[in-house]
Amino acid sequence: MTEIRTQLRFILNDRDVVLDEISATRTLLDYLRLDRRMTGSKEGCAEGDCGACTVLVGRLRGGELRYESINACICFVGSLDATHIVTVEHLSGASGPLHPVQQAVVDHHGSQCGFCTPGIVMSLYGMWMQTPDPSVNDIEVALQGNLCRCTGYAPIVKAGRSISAYGKVVADPLVAERQSITARLAALRDGRRIELGTGKDRIIVPASADDLAEVYAANPTGTLVAGATDVGLWVTKFMRDIGPMIYIADVADLHGIAELEGALRIGAAVTYSEAQAAIVARYPQLKEFWSRIGGQQVRNAGTIGANIANGSPIGDTPPPLIALGASIVLRKGDTRREVRLEDFFIAYGKQDRQPGEFVESVIVPALPEGEQFAAYKISKRRDEDISSVCAAFRVKVEDGKVASATIAYGGMAATPKRARAVEAALIGKPWTSATVEAALPAYEVDYQPLTDMRASAEYRLLVAQNLLRRFFLETTGAAERLTREVA
Image (tube, rainbow, N blue to C red):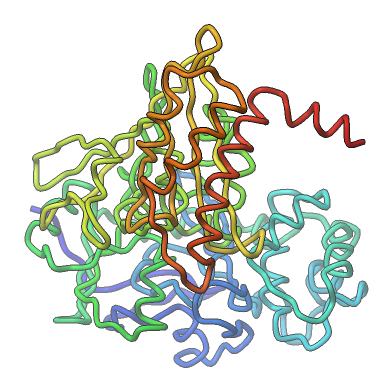
């Protein structure tokens, strides 16, 4: 029988914190600002979009302590057991010198109104600890999730390039004290299930995947929460009561990534950031696409399993995973079943998932040699934005003809959906521009997109067609030839 603890325990800057009670939906930002009166972290959007609330969270992964930037405004305190939370207040003492990151921002005039500055400082701090000599691209990636309306970013980028001139990473307290913090966090991870509160404020943190299966079977109306990059908005924007909350972000046996023969198995709680190296190594065509999933803070918190389980028609990962032929392993109690990802999505808000059943892992087959594959994301803003249209293509060409085609879109229907009529219009035909053009009318058979704040129905349909054109041009080398001719 699993032992139960009735306290949340974590380290906040340099202090140990023990909580006997807290609301299941209490965000870290509200806890810092309202409960602890630590007002350095700001609330700009309350939806993980502006980065003004950015803090660092240190977690043990495989015994290694890793700090990552996250959005405190949509992170629930209940998900932070056995972590080290670092806020902007911890960078410099009340009477001490500024931290190298802070001094670099000051000297390069990277702050004007100052509201977004604490979040930018924390994002740069997280980057600098991993990359002491960053390139401009490194800095731009680190700041994808931070919006600034004053400086135009050039002074901030200059500050990011110069941090190491003000101090060395090896001398930073989070590096110097890493061994001590690692030991303290390891002591907090006692292998017990955590349960606090009652009713809608009940918090459950399972001790393992087996424990999660037991807990969820007993509480099938509970809300599973991983990175909360979507669930957080249910609370901050829609004021929903969604307890009891079952936090799974740190269930260790849902974090594995395994290289199987002919496939990649990804645990449901693996974040986008954790999966990136393995995904790009297996599917290099997804390198640019993957870096456009949210901003750095979202990728550090959001998980692939939750992106699928949530069933959103505009989730970024389902289209490329469907095109690759991925499947998911669903678990209820001790029973598991494997479902093709494209069959998991039934209708808007409805998936092939029984009460008490959860996504345990995602299995992604290797791309067979000789097949063409690509994924594209279209959004109003390049970084840190939700897709208007997301598309993925996988085509096999033999003897100049299309032998097989798998095409999937997000943002075009009530669920992520295959373009089966378009596929049928391509298969067996020569892989030529004429074939592509002849297939375009089939989009109106497959999709009747909606008009909303992100795009009109007409725009979505035209973009979907143009992305097939783009895929053809890029995979046949025609795009490169056109570029040379224009130049």
